[in-house]
Amino acid sequence: MLFRSMSAFSISAVLGVPTGLFFANHFDWRAPFLLVATLAVLVLLGVWKVVPAMRGHIRTDGTSRDAIRQLRAVFSEPNHRRAFAMMATLIFGGFSVIPFISPYMVANVGLKETDLPYLYFFGGMATAFTSRWFGRLSDRHGKREVFTVVASISILPLLITTNMPPWPVWLAVAASVVFFIFISGRFVPAMALLNSAALPGQRGSVLSLSSAIQQLASGCASLLSGLLIDQTASGSIASLAQPRP
Image (cartoon, rainbow, N blue to C red; front, side, top):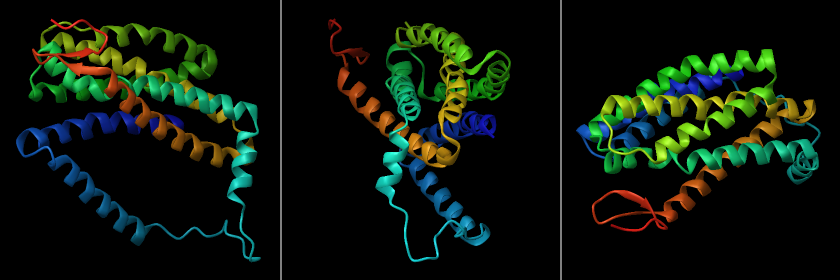
């Protein structure tokens, strides 16, 4: 189930991002958001009609669960706190860069906006296969060991992507594929570590809280990194600490 969810992320990169860029390039920047909103309404209607109601967990004795007590129980476990910190750090590091890949590729590397779908298409295609490979490696050699190796290797494509000079499209796409493989590859053993850290009776709560923490970390990372970069007079993207031409 874990590797299926990681494959879903890859498929969304293969189909979702290029589709959104296609609509933005050929219609308007609002078109992808309208498309997502329309699909969300259709999915909501489908769920309402097809998915049966799940009320078996609701107590019938008139009492309700104490959410605050449940949160305290989850956060009182040291392994849970360490797992949350790990996932928050991973997401924060990734989303400090990922939201700005597209504008950086256009402004600094020299790609056209019509070239951007290739980055996500080939990157997503690659991760659809490599995520399962990283999963098998985690089962064979250990989750912590594979995570350590993959996370260490991911530093190199991260540095290359954020310091890329003007390159031809094929070379920029190749570098992006390596970036996607190792940045997303970290999450396969990381999610396995998160699952193993959760106590059996609290696994659902741990996963739900982890998802919320990841969303918070991605928002904070995008906001903070947006405050640290600027656009030069020539139109390129640079750090605020970087000297201006």
